[in-house]
Length: 155
Image (cartoon, rainbow, N blue to C red; front, top):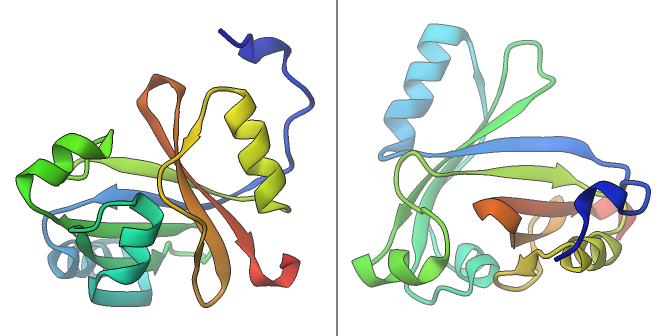
């Protein structure tokens, strides 16, 4: 077992987003907008290719919405996964409502993956390209799901 307390100096990271699994992204987004003043940034219904690449789950799809918190500093991602029941059992973490992951922006994605792997994390799918970043999901010790992303400016 790796001693996490005596590892190298931590990577320089910043919070990319907090992702919350919900049943309905439109309803949850509408609530956050109306009640707390969140502003929509991005929304897609029926995402398949990118979510399948990141998770290595061939039957998974999702609806996704990202919102900016009031003041614009933090991003909340709402995601509704759609999959056969068997996909959830093989995924390694909860994809239903109430599940979540921590999204972190890292300066060098490959270095961050290596550091995470050395401390017991495992890449779930493959590195996936988005409009503004490259990203990958990793399962980390203790059941933690993280998304590491490198902005396109660093690529």
